[in-house]
Image (tube, rainbow, N blue to C red):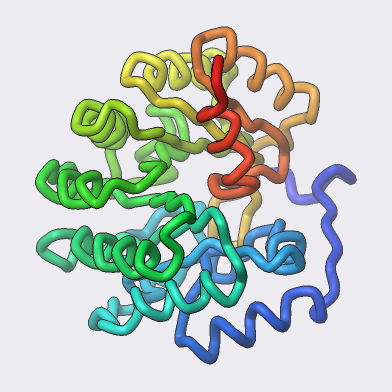
Amino acid sequence: MIERKPEWLHVEFSRKEVQAVADMMNRLNLHTVCREANCPNMGECYRKRTATFLILGENCTRHCRFCNVSKNRACSLDPDEPAHVADAAVKLGLKHVVVTSVTRDDLPDGGAEHFVKTVQAIRAALPDANIELLVPDFKGDFNAVDTVVDAEPDIFAHNVETVPRLYAQVRPEADYDRSVSVLAYAKLRRPGMVTKTGIMVGLGETEAEVVQVMDDLVRVGVDILTVGQYLRPTKAHLPVAEYVTPQQFDRYARLGRERGLKYVFSAPLVRSSYHAAEAFDTVKSPGV
């Protein structure tokens, strides 16, 4: 079992750097995945006055063994949440708005319509902003995927998180093929839309298994892949099997590009919405 973090994973920030954004989120009764998931980049992102909004409440109905988001009983949806997200995006001056959610298997549509209402509120408040949605798998319900895709987000994202062999250990209530099929269906539904996914490494996967995931993603038309180091939130979560070196992360980026992914952001502290605007701008640039 590996516990001691290597030097390249040490991040420092002061409370002052995050307090202004955190206070605003509290006033609007909003959650961010930055804080709920204890993201190591929270200081950097909050300092730059950006954040990834977490909608559908703060409690997840699944029990993934890597995730720090609360597993308490899911609450009723806040009808004001979409408007509050839009208000916060305006106050932050965002040009690229990233919205994700907990998984809500208790809702008939998995929260798809709530995503749509959030997109509509953001579009009304910030008509020129790009909108990136990082959605759950909706239990493979393509009607729910239709609902989200037809809201015309600029980026449709869904994380596969890890290699197929480790799903039973890492994501026991999820299914790798189902996650890939959600990405495939979204691209077929709206071919011009950018699709995106992310994986963690350091859970015991092999390079060959990561490369196979890349091949699967290229096959279904995924444009953007993020690769980051798994970090254990608490001792109740899965232990880290390996701290992957920066050199190996660089190799993953090269292997992904060689296989046809348009953009691969691979580094120890990368998370799915880290530098999201940069990834989108790169993919949408002429000649990419």
